[in-house]
Image 1 (cartoon, rainbow, N blue to C red):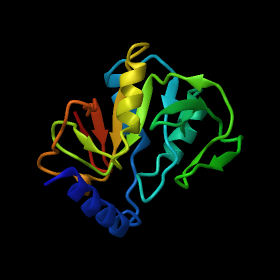
Image 2 (cartoon, rainbow, N blue to C red; image 1 turned 180 degrees about the vertical axis):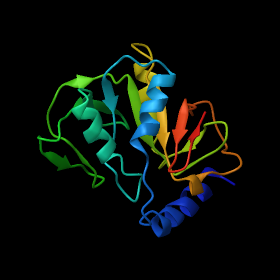
Image 3 (cartoon, one colour; image 1 turned 90 degrees about the vertical axis):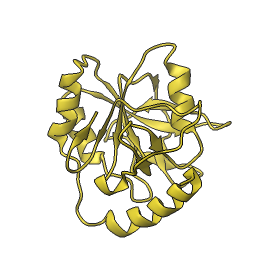
Length: 181
């Protein structure tokens, strides 16, 4: 299956199934961090959009544990930065309809929680096709290598994702049922 076909299929499937109460267990995220011995406290999350796994409760719990929360802010030329943000601060809606911080300091996360449309057992992912996360990771890995944690529903798994040289493999995928590494 081509990536465009995967996107179309899983956008529809996620829309029909995502409201069924699937949630990611906060303890699974902590397990991943402990397993990798992550000491850094800067976490790049995302504001769920278009039936993505909702990580807001996870981010709230991490903020209470003194993590610095960052959300992506879309820039020109298919680029983005992660901006420090707190739940006490307002968000603005970007050109895609996604809430993002309006102001704040650019941070380089130690951990990135990444939404996706589909994934395979080799930790490859299909996103919306803009390449924002792949470009961001490629750009910042010169400074630091963040732990890449995809968040997905188990039903989003496929046998094989077609990949190209720009695609970046994740370190883990956490679903409502398990941790894939």
